[in-house]
Length: 416
Image (tube, rainbow, N blue to C red; front, side, top):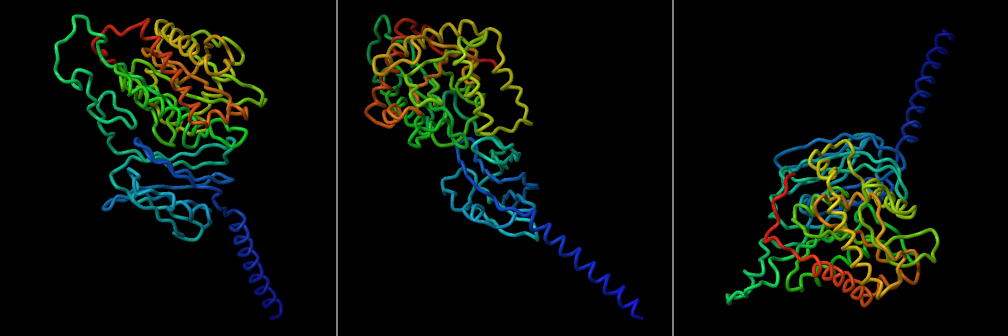
């Protein structure tokens, strides 16, 4: 009798011990997200869930009404998840509401109420400074909206040409120009990718966007030019997609605006880059190209998605003429910038920048200054200096076209 009782007690104690072990194990495995971020853009909205460990997850769609559901296993409630809904703007193109709650023990559920049918892309990113593990939810429209040729972020549809904008009058025997010059302006970095950080906390992505918007405004004020922005807000655009957007706009030029950092705060000056087919022209150019090309790793792209159109766009073996034009453009812009700022390099450098690989558009990357230099960081944030810098860039562009005027009345339709 006593032995049987001892056995029952031992069995009960063992069950209690195992239950406690499971509970302790569950507590040990549960984690709170360290950060959540929401990045709306015209093309897609990105939701980023950051944590100290990879998050096991499942997602599925629900209809009537349209919803995207993401279940996070082993995640418990916390301030970061609570803050997610508050980041949503009524102007978001795709998400109308965000709801977060415990779905069942050990599972947090995130529900995105949608404004339209979507095509989600959900993927994990490995830790990369300054981030930990990231679970990324990209929300694309189910069918990409048809955008008129030449229309990019912030560009109104049906932009008139010069002839349509002016009242009828006798045409001169020799026209001053044959059509509007289209300049694609690429504000470097954005969204998850802040770019370089200044000595006093400035972010490269903010500086480049401010310069890009000013540059667009001043180019649009020119009689024979118009500008389109690759991005017009704080969101990430993959490097290859920047090239695709410029080609979709049938751009005549591509200007990528940056403000680099270096480990030594005394580094200073502006420099300009073109693409190279045969390696970098210097160790510094090679280092900077790798740093800029790593933007896709920081900003976050789904490496499992294969895009044959993009691949064909980036791989072109007949870019020599375009690169020569890029060098001429770069020299003209560099000379003008040298009138307002120290030049870090007095000649155009070359390296394998992914963002400059449009096969048929002269393209340059402008490192406006070193944001890591406190003096240059201050100048980059000064509206008056920004105006001078933008005027110098436009001066270089105008010099380039004075020497190499457009001769065709319209861009030929490019093959993908």
